[in-house]
Amino acid sequence: QVQLVESGGGLVQEGGSLRLSCAASGGTFSSYTMAWFRQAPGKEREFVSAISRSGGNTFYTDSVSGRFSISRDNAKNLAYLQMNTLKPEDTAVYYCAGKQSSYKTFNYANAGPYNYWGQGTQVTVSS
Picture 1 (spheres, helix red, strand yellow):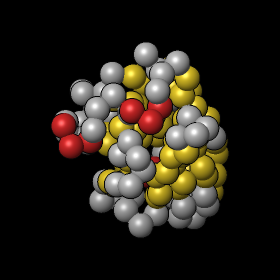
Picture 2 (cartoon, rainbow, N blue to C red; picture 1 turned 135 degrees about the horizontal axis):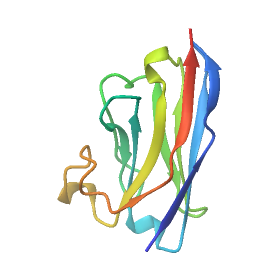
Picture 3 (tube, one colour; picture 1 turned 90 degrees about the vertical axis):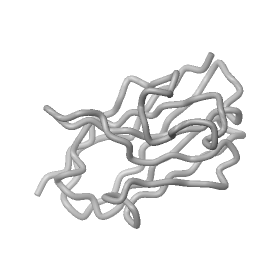
């Protein structure tokens, strides 16, 4: 069973950058597909990005493609979300999530299948 802790959120101006980190403990990190979701006030939690267990495959929702980059370091039990050219509509609480399965075996863009979640980190983009 893995525990996930996010960090790196904060307040940034439009056009700025942030890097979120997700530290995992208590499990075999390399066996988990990892993802980032976000939830803005009054909205449902939405998929942002996912990465395969090896890191060789990455996936993005259209609204962040080309601006965000997901990565992982299995030796350090860390997943990252590099966010560039941030927009006010990126403002949300960002959550990392993990599932101990290959991304090929479930709908990685759906929050339901993920077994493990962090507590979330707030990202606020001012205009």
